Length: 349
Image 1 (cartoon, rainbow, N blue to C red):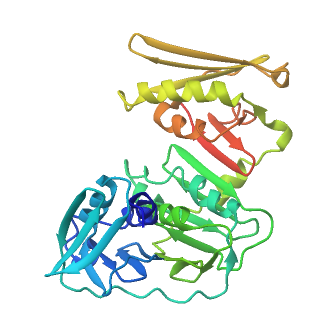
Image 2 (cartoon, rainbow, N blue to C red; image 1 turned 60 degrees about the vertical axis):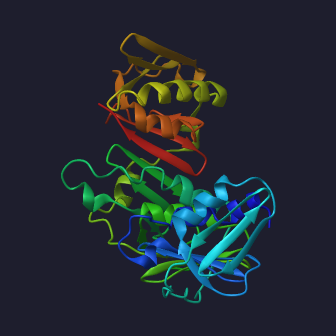
């Protein structure tokens, strides 16, 4: 197998490997003649792949992944000799010491299944966009996680207190319980391994994905203590309230704002809506950037006070949004960025 192909095959395991874990089970990657497996506290994965070895062994996952990513693009040959995994790739060669055998859990068989589509994959990517930041301030630990909500209109959502990302999966409920909450890492793992044609099943304790070549399991976590569904429904809008923003100009704005925001974590973008235009402004020190969007849809719209939005959060949203909803500005400094079934509520000041 070419090293670049093997590196692609191994990509899900970069989310599972933990070189500082105390348990050998979480540091190891299992290499078998026809499959690769690894486990983390939040989930596990197995990928079918011919490795050319004749026995099942365990090596340090971080070391093996680093090795494969650093070798030349050539055929990767593996063998077991004298207590080591011996590798050769082009003109490079080396060996990795074997770990004592560990017992990795076998993934359970899936039950009732949900067909995986491009939309479901996108839901776990974009619905989880706001996950991972709800760790600052009082009570935010109770808001961590990514929720697959099956009450009526199914959707995936997450929050970091400043933003709330949502992806709506249509109008038909899925074959699953009403609610399932997983970690940010779990959502990232599912989004990375799922492909159209596979299937997802949801039990009371886990989400399981299966295809012809990949199996993955993600443990459910403690549900959020606050039900975000009512908050999402509060900011419902009609499609005719969406103002389109040119994607290429959004991209230019996002790239520059991202560079500036990286130097100042508390930087903010000012959004102003007036009669016939929407303006975004970013200023940090002596650097300033402005964008103006003229649109007939805002003709006669009452001039609103400027709203300051967190720059680092906005940068992530702008990479995926093509429209904006400003109808709620007169009630609350919350701006909705959207693109079809994806929306992200950004709280301002």
